[in-house]
Image (cartoon, rainbow, N blue to C red; front, side, top):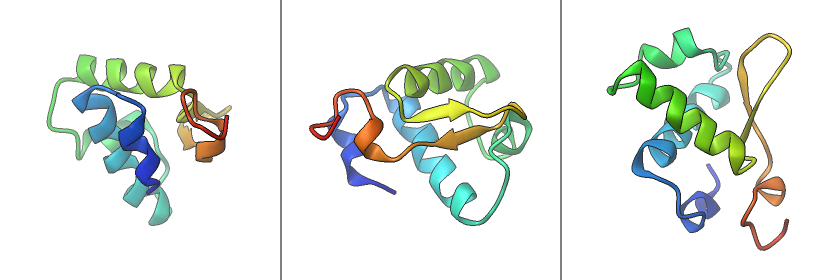
Length: 82
């Protein structure tokens, strides 16, 4: 988990989704909506909105299989390294 996530000014839901995705990815789980919904406490609509927000900021992207991938923080919009 990159602490710079807190510098992007994201919504609580988007930040929460990032915090959920990181350990799943580190554990080798595919970051599919189905896998994530097993742990997500809000509605599917809020999951989609959070994912869209992370995507707009370049934090995640969708791969060819439809799963999300976390991008390195130097590619995040709003990062001082971008």
